[in-house]
Image (cartoon, rainbow, N blue to C red):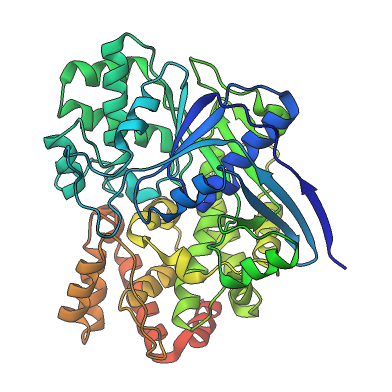
Length: 496
């Protein structure tokens, strides 16, 4: 019999202290849950959330508005243990992207709700702006950290800064308005899976602001806080099966999200205009988040990416299916303990072996249908942080990295847009067109193809591509994977 715990939402308050950019499933199942718990515990009515969807479909924004901005989160410890939470902390939702069929509107603004969103961000009551826009939403070169000024969206923000389309553009315009009005700036808190996410956000905003006004850029650099954070909760994309399971529990909610019971949020404590006292609700406030975020990126996210590219090539659909294969479980343990963990500098007392085992237990949660194709998205943006920077440090210290060499080989093969059995799938990545071009040009010459991918210096750090042993290992793994399949490649790895 299923054990169900239910928590209704706290009474509505109406005061908004936080604007969030990126109204996706993760925000609704992570940050919003912490804020809902804080509101229920404290009764503090000043930290409601205005959340905006910057791209994708307008339907979620309208659906949440129709529901009074309330929705449900189902937290599964396993298939028989679930906590149902009603979330009411959202006070407003906006859409600023370009929905299908929506061009520029009559007054030249991009997206339907840009004006009210900027007005909200410019309001003195807003003291924090948070982001979950994925790695590509910052428009930074993943290898160098430089702003992608030749991207059409960034170029549009430079040409017409008062009608921004990107998250950095929205931040620059709102901060410019606050500066002009004599208002203190809000703190900017990135909640995306990037190392040094606060500092990378700061770099994107300042670089974009400098294209507009050097004094504005200097003011942002001097006055605006960009704390880093580490977020952790597995939140798969919703499926029809998820909605059916919720309906069996009496929840008919098109905006519901499902996640695991585990949740973690580690935040650098730098909020000049104040913040919620959310320590009592499980948020870890620290002076330096870097060790925690690097640990999570290289162990959890790095392992997820290994499963995603290798598993997808073998036709495996979910993390649960993949991690329950003995050979893939063995791969993850080897990767975490021998390749990733030695690159980490953790506080005394951190047990990385225990952390790794806890990750494997979370991956094996039979209640989650976390699709490997979802994890495989945007690999060009994710892999430098998850695999490549740590691997470079390992190689420079004189060690090898055969697990990551196999992972890179699998990623290259994955970008061919069909698995090892010939089943086709779309590639969701900002560099998808370039991948297709490389496969078209070099697809019949494995060595040339591998070399061409490793020469993509906006993804692969040049110093890593110059490591002969790594190049040789990637090519060897690619050849074995394409000739002998997943089982053959994993068996070959076990012999090294």
